[in-house]
Length: 421
Image (cartoon, rainbow, N blue to C red; front, side):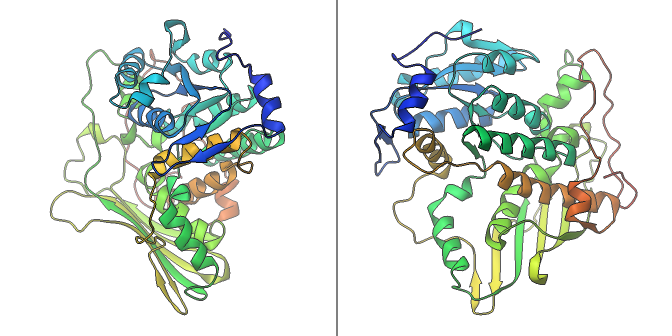
């Protein structure tokens, strides 16, 4: 299916115009991107809470864009997202929302149908297990990409995603990932100072995401095993990568950013200490990971993430120690703050229009995601792993066949030191 031409400009016209720099973009105090360019058509793949939020962020931060297509595995999620965006309180969002019935796609091949339209860019917010497959297809279809993190759940998926990102670079397709701290002014300014030597040589660091219990979803009796696991996605390692990958990747990304690359090895532990282990709504999720990452030059990073209830200390932060001082990696005194969830879309659209340098965060985010995955692998197996061993491992945790009619038992919960990676 091919979408009709909109706004008097085709994708080919748009690309030609971008190449000669005929667009002017002005970022206002409120984070709006003013432009006199042709309208950029956007498709949303993955219409859950994060996908809906990302679409809204994109529309409220940019003008001359239109959300024209939506795709999801489940019809009810697409309908709900379509309603929420279409009735949003921000008139700029609703004025740039133009999804017709024939541009709504549902099912396993919904992403293919959307990619066959003439959208210029996609927002990808499906659950992480399927991301490498969808992004590979999006690059093949010639679309610019905003994709959420993490970008995969296992080394096989990471390698596929890296290959797609490198192909996107060859084709001149821009990619921004959902590691929004990379677009947040307080982080940008403070990390530049660190890398310019403000705290001397870095000798150690910490990265924490220690929070309360995660969300869980009750099972509808009409749902098959597979549908329930995808809908209750955070509770299943094959769908989300476990909490160290899905959530803690943000903190680990900051550390990789500061230190200039991924770690050289990791030693880790973890497990599940919840009293309600019989509650299948938590699937095979672990509630704690503790990792000792070693980076270049012998720098060690203490990484902790957990989901605990009760009167437990909480903390989500990064902290770097140097020979001349310490830093939280974030300057809270920075003025002219723009919501990074909006800014990341502004940065992507500026690059697409040719008014900012080409941007491709694919490999960068893949390395941060793999940093989290290798931490999980080391904790599950009890083995110390090098970067090369983890990245090149022949490990795929996503079921080979996904079919709603098949049985997909939950668990078992990985046993530390004896579980497969």
